[in-house]
Length: 114
Image 1: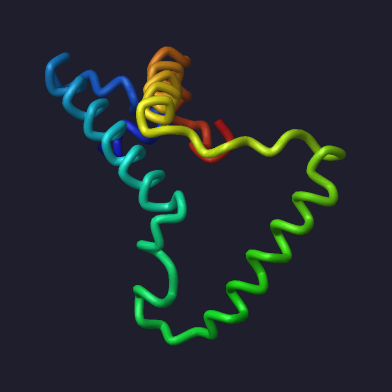
Image 2: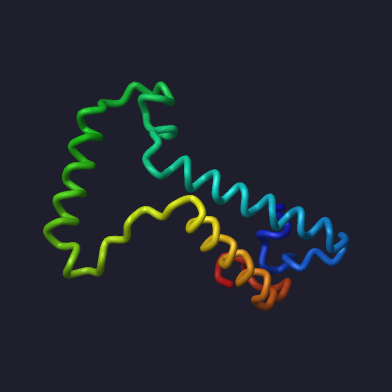
């Protein structure tokens, strides 16, 4: 999957079309699982990781972000609502298809500036 994420080698010419599809599906599943774990389910907060950081500071920071969004959100664009699982997967699937359809970078190019 790592070679697929490099825009210089994303075409994966050395494997079969079926294997490329498996990689594309695996990437999509990984993205969806990552996003659903970040959407507020609490799987990545410090209370669950055992870092022992001050949870009241985290709550205060979240409240400040909500206040800023309420105060300035209309000036800087609309605040998007969290997507449902099927809508998120559909959008991510389209992003993966767009990535596949885009031209590969040249081997001399930096993949970070592609």
